[in-house]
Image (cartoon, rainbow, N blue to C red; front, side):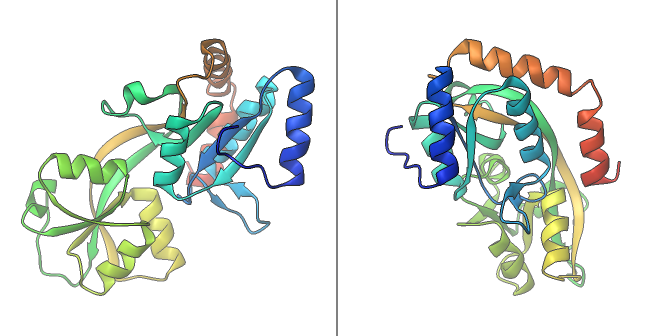
Length: 242
């Protein structure tokens, strides 16, 4: 297990079962990134991507546990520790060799948000180049914009950017379209509006490179079946009203 500590009775039970099966428990790490992964009212980790992951491991009969962590910690742990994966992870060129990939789990649209009363005119992403954009540490949207030379101010968590935008401390906020809509509704920030979308990406379960290739193939083969047997479509309808 390396530095990973198992603190729950559930985890201990899973470890015992996995030992009996000869299959180590997979440590699945994620962050608060609604509606894809988030804490539900019952205290369990849920969300659209989490439901995909739970069903995937149920069908493959692989023992697992899910834990919420800050994004950069979860990402680095999955890079360093065997039997560990992190989701929902955007697959980029820079990350390609750091993981073995299962997916895609879900599609994600990147968006730029601003305050409705702000006079700045934004018709295309490049129009935001002279201004300050809020992002958060380790996030793929932020890394993408920084790579293009935009002025991105980073915070530890994305929800802080909504508050900074409302307070006028940043000019725009780059985030997932669905996450932005979720946080705006949650925090009743009606003056914050979607200005434009600028990229469509896919998010994956990114696993440590020491996870056996046979396990990765098994997960990907099962996921492919899920994407074509109606489970994926039902999930979309429930979370995205599509």
